[in-house]
Amino acid sequence: MSFRNQVLAAFKQLHKTRKVVFEGDTYALKLTQDKINEEFKKNKNETDSDKIKELIKIANDSETILRKNVVQLKLKEDTKDEESQTWEMKIREDTEMYDFTEPWEPPPVNKKQKKCS
Image (cartoon, rainbow, N blue to C red; front, top):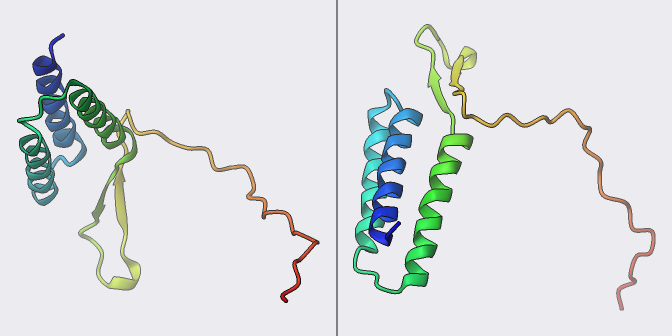
């Protein structure tokens, strides 16, 4: 696949993913659209093949992070006051869920402490 096709595929996939991730949030949709377009326009005249490969990898990695790690939170409208605000999290099928059941262990205490001179 040529660089042009790879760049276009990454561009299209980023836009497709942002539409899914930020569905219904016009502000986030516009912001991400502008940022994606800005980054691709900034590098449109790049001719170094190694740099182009790196930029394609960054675009693909960004799409993966966006798809798997970004969730949408929405304030429920039935919330009356600030103290009892309820948020709804939109978790998609692609969203990675991490298991945080293992207890956190503090770092070992260093018994040998250096003396200040």
